[in-house]
Length: 238
Ligand code: SF4
Image (cartoon, rainbow, N blue to C red; front, side, top):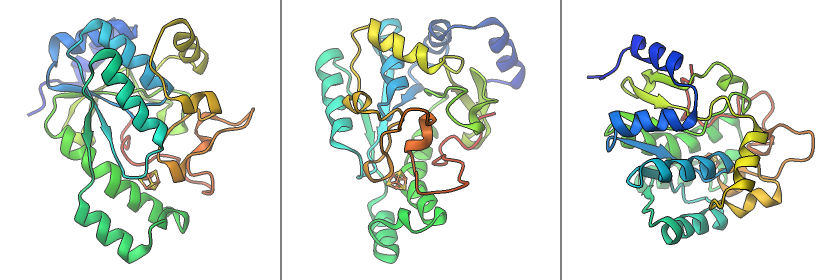
């Protein structure tokens, strides 16, 4: 049964305005049944740093889709060395991946949006759904200016797609400049792909650097036209 109501979320959104305060609330009210989802992009680097200062026992998890860039695996090791963080790694169901790849090809995602969303569903959405079913809340690095679908997201919201648990977006109001400034002014562990123009980081075959003037998400699934540039994890951002 969900522990919180929409009224609770409204009150939290009225009274809490900073990332630190949001994470302190999560630590006091949800830990250890709350965890941060991370793909080790810039926003994740910021949040991991803030969270470690608020509660060194905060939990972090990532999805190993089997198609991640080497640099992302390196971050997981560096976090373990710097903070002693044991990132919980979730894997897709091997039989589902085998069935999909044998039926549709190893690089099926380039063939159609439908195939790409199937791959994201098998490698990302289903594993994260299994994890979220064990939690009362999760923490994300969503920001308003990442995609159109995220414009209406709030700092605290009930996640109807995941059993009504609390979804906390502590830096929802931060700009890209805020994120960059935090990384520059704090000794954070971050993915070295950021220095090579990867402003949003996902699977290796589906992510590339963005050029000056492009939006942050244009390096994701760049061959698609008219797609929402979402993998399906944040299906209910409002
Ligand atoms: S980002 Fe690409 S490789 Fe990763 S799960 Fe989605 S379609 Fe598959």
